Length: 107
Image (cartoon, rainbow, N blue to C red; front, side, top):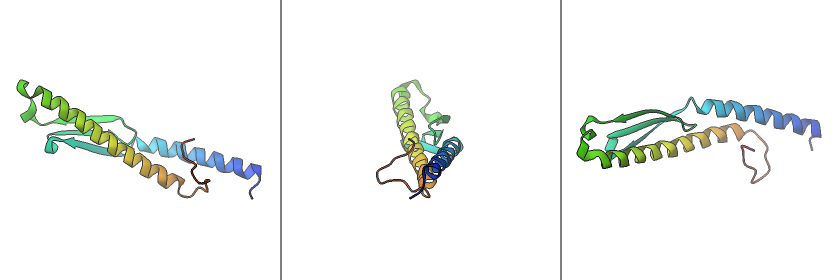
């Protein structure tokens, strides 16, 4: 069994790796779409919205409610994909760590 100093060093290394991974999440981009691609939202895996693209065919006053619904759906799609990308990156980071069963990161 490792001594306390080794455990402390392992925890510090894990924290350092976690911070690097968190910083890297803002560099990973995902795209949420709705309406068959009429509305597209680009976001970082950290959840930052980067861009919104709305097809010109939707820019009519009579389409206002549908555009609002499609934007919300695309944002939710992007958020879901961002969460997935973040989970994958965190799984990569924790793959080499010897954590007790059921232990979840970040702390």
